Length: 548
Image 1 (cartoon, rainbow, N blue to C red):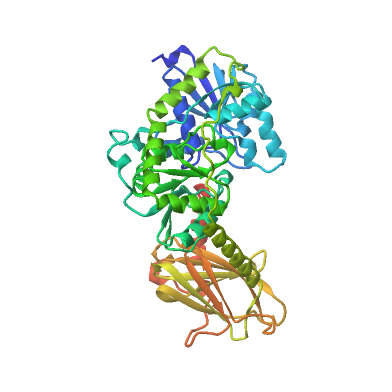
Image 2: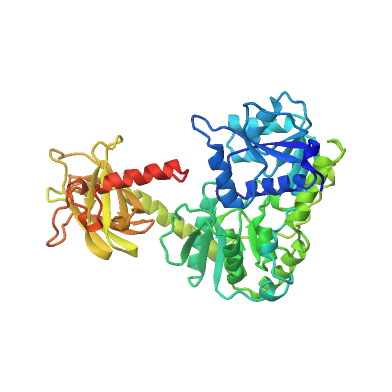
């Protein structure tokens, strides 16, 4: 290993790291490979707009999330120092590198075809133009290198997708990696905050698959965002650790990982655990995978559901894909991937030596097409959705006697609170303590005085377990209401994140009209503040910590 005192400095331009960010972990791994070659790694973080960036907090978070960090954290655009080479890592970091006056060789590490992150707008054009700055491009994956080189040039080379050692068993292809799954279940990466993960398509495919095979269970992971499916067979695991991912892959019949801007690393990790994989049949997935290593389905819900249900039921196909996947990832380690990156950056080769035309398609199998049964189910679900949307426009009658709001929670709860408002500025917002216990709660809400005609849209938000500490958001519903009995219906049932809500004109027998929470004493929880104040304090803490 070279001594870092020799003066070699790699200046990386990076976005602010986020928890669970696989792309940032890859950047750190590549930086570690340069460190082994004697480089000091300076990470220049792109400053967010109109926000304070605490670099100490960034450093502590990075160590907590990834277990590694660069030598130094600095703010891009302010007091930049000399370096041996500079590396941009995303489309919005290129202009910072390009405007630097240090004159060091510039590289561009590309992990996705980022123009596809956007619609046809200014950001799309800006992302395209980053490939025209003359930086030496190093990509992860062959397809991406070929696409950028054919369209823009300047590609230095690519690295294959590596897999961390924790995903392999002690003997690759043996023991856990080759044994049959223990549960009739499918796991899927669910990240609605990343458009390239096409979460709405995944959700619709799951709906169809559950109709085709009611015995299937789906485990979704990768994000704490709510899943818009109220079904006990769909389990949201949120952000999980590497060890938990490995255990999940060993339990399931197959895994679904959708990505449309480059192959994801996740399918390779699934393969290393012996898990058969399903992705989409698209250009970006035809050059880094090969025949027999996974299934690629057409990019529609019925085709994806057909692939899932058929593979989950086909033991022979699972065994074949398990072997093909293990063969593909054999000896593909993260260490080799990072070493390849460092070799490219540290070599004397100039951009232009790479020939994008040499990249050949290695997946030649036909895509999985939708079965007739899946198409029929998809059509029925679409029709039901259209009817439901139309019915949701019909208001519920809100008589003088008030409306009854009932909430059934999917999980036992010690208490439930309701917040209701209609005005855009929330000037009419009110909190209510709901009656009931365990999982069933209800409250009667009075109609506003003087409102006798017209229709208004009301927001209903539900929180549980406030008396046990920080409140837990249980879901929300938007319902039109009207005092006019000639235009409304008597009730509406709405599924929400944490249960189901029923809003009806008829009050429940012996139900007392709800009081605003601000008028309720919270002595049962030992709190000195009202619930709305505690909720506001909790939200403020989430925003400060970067959660909300």
